[in-house]
Image (cartoon, rainbow, N blue to C red; front, top):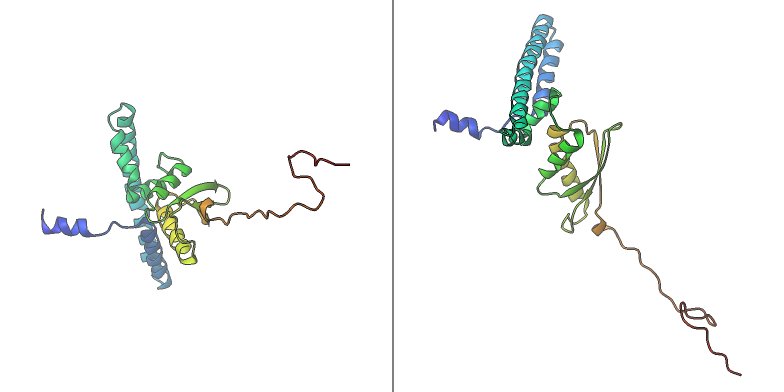
Length: 201
């Protein structure tokens, strides 16, 4: 393996959300500097590249789905959908074959350190309701909840950008049980479920 190949593999894969923000920052800077022609040219360049690799991604999905249909390509399609970078590009171009809830489940499966369960997703508001899962879900402290929310939001940015807010609730095991107060029966009352007291003359 060449040094160039090793360096390429060691370089972290780009994040689609970060790349999009960077492109916007560059275009805004060009516009603010007053170089209108350069800004227009840059926007045109972005559109051409988006159309080009978008068409390429569409072709990849088309070929893999065709192979999956005849039973020869299901593994390849699954690998494609499990990759965060590829998934983010498919979602960006509305090419991902899975629905939103399925992609949310994929994202949650990738959150290793904070086990959470899907409660509900509101497509109208984009709100995702979750709860911590299992007895080892954490100590219940604020820092743990913040870390879990951050991990979930990072995963969702790639797999399900439709999610605009996350509500994380506690698990059933973490909820405080309701204590029932058991007291003495009032004087003269019969025990519940027992026979009536025997009266003597």
